[in-house]
Amino acid sequence: MGVVAYLCYLPFFAHFQSLYGSLSRVREPSPLGGFLVIFGMPCLLIALALLLMRPARGWFTTLRADARCAAIAGAAACALGAAIASRLLVLVVTVPLLCTLALLWVRMDAQPGRRMAFGIAGVGLGLLSVIEIVFLADDLIGGDFERMNTVFKFDFQAWTLLALSSVALLSIIVERWRATPSVWRVVISWFLGVAVILALLYPVFGTPARLRQRMTPIPPAAGLDGFAWMATGSVPADQFSNSSSGEPVYFADDLALIQWMNATLRGTPVIAEASIGPYRGNGSRISSATGFPTIIGWERHEEQQRDRLLLPARVDDVRRIYTSNEPRAVQDVLNRYHVQYIVVGDVERKTKLDAGQIGAQRKGESYASPIGLATLNRMVEQGILRVAWQSDTTLLYEVASGWRTGAADAR
Image (cartoon, rainbow, N blue to C red; front, side):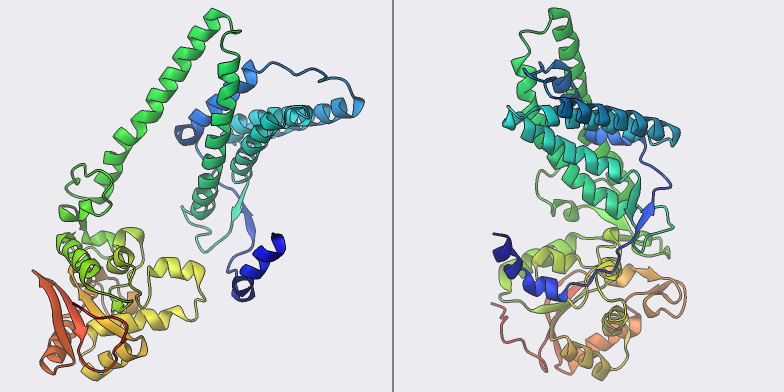
């Protein structure tokens, strides 16, 4: 299986280039309260299972096993002391649980099922412990968010592992329930009940609080439809760049365009749209929502995953489509990247740039300049482009001459 897996991934391995490979020591550890909001429930279930579990026979039968247990206990005490001294409060929770699981894992030769559950939980807690000490030093190093990529990527894996193991260890709580004194059963029941209620409160109150930071007004509850917010939601234009314009960016017309493209276009036509970087900028919103390729995605993400020497040319080429006063220059870009559709919406019209940002000459310059928009209209008059779709100020231009993909057709 290993050989087959390696051969299947050999093209990836042969071309993979890691942009970041060094570790850095954590300067600002995670706050304990935030950690417990996310991981408190699985940690509580694991702790209860360990407290209620009845030791198996033969725990203290071999000198070698006893020596390993003593070493684990000693390491746990040292690690816990170091965590407290270093103000790594998350380790005060994870290290005792991790070392207890390691101790039980050593002793569980006769119970492989539980041993697997302890191992899965131990790996999850181990990941959470390690990232409180070191993190991958990427291009965010030195800023307020330098740990962001390390934390959220490993937290996803750790949460999944802890959730799986806590479900398995829940069987221990159920198994030992009747043998537990009634007073303790009442205490544990209340404790678990309060913990479950607190865990369920977070999405109820946390989601609107987060939306208030990003959108005005807050979109109504819309179920599982990830695009429903676009019908009523808006985002201040200054969240798209470092320059404030004071204008809200609306997405209702973008939503209508996405729905039209998904229902109408076939094949994989390349589309051009603004590339402005951040998540909240939504600069690649049409490509992301339709699956159609674009010239460059979120600029900020591409910088973390691609050769930086190749990115500026693409970023500048996309901007040239929206700012050039020469139809020939625009058509050269369209031909170079085999573009068949150009998106012009609120994001392109209202995003304001700082001087020097994506080729801007002055602060407050629009991503799509009036000259550039006039050039696109001239290209329509010249028959190079045609308006394939329009709703209010959102337009979709189609390349009517020059490059044609041959794979896409509009019905």
